[in-house]
Image (cartoon, rainbow over all chains, first blue to last red; front, side, top):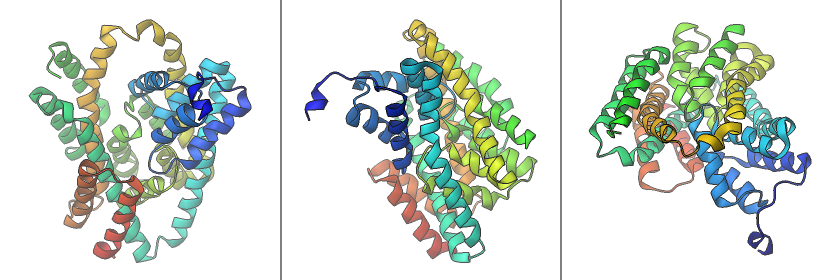
Length: 185
Length: 170
């Protein structure tokens, strides 16, 4: 526990950065964010809690994979381009190998009806995870009718009517920004 | 494969909140427009990507793998990650300057309802591989409820979905 009290120290070198990000990716069952927090804030003490929250806010603001963005931003902060590349490679290396191994295994068994039924069940449960998480994140919007209308409109346009995002976003984003300016969302 | 790379690179730059917000668009392109995978395969590959550890974005590599093998997997993952990473690299450098800017908070507030609508649409698309079926909808609804009311490890929810899948669909 001694280490926990000391002030956070950036990784000593590219090697430590790499090993840290490998250990995030390799263990990230059911989501990367909790593991990123655990490794960088608790285990290796690279970042203080507030720093982590701030980097995360930036990475959630940007498009792309959130923790992938964190690897780029933090790698750059500590070691420049080499750091960004090292952290990203570390993060994706093992999960990439594992997901392909699992997919190959699955391809062997896909004709088996029980396996197919199980995987469809896992997929639909995963769909429910997304929906549930979105509803949780949307709680602050519950009393904002315009925000709810935007959520519903985006859902119907993209999920039901299957209109391309390339048409939906150019309409939805300006409307959302207008609503935000009026304080409606 | 070039088409795949271009599509994914484009999706990369509009994937606010990660891959989940562009899932419906991804499904529309790879299933409806190009016919690279069937709707059922799309949901099952998503299941594989959820069952493996690591970032959700690896789902992109599985689509690439299905389309063009190992090379396709690498190209798809790179196409989905690199444009966003370049943007993150550039914004990471100027972030300090506009961290507290009012327009940044404005955009963040504006993005939330749009992103949530898109993520829910992605869930709906994944949960209806063969059109609306009460068994799929039931599993998805149960898992949605489990996320909202409980603090279960997502792996248990996925495992329960697998068991329900065998019982209801097998």
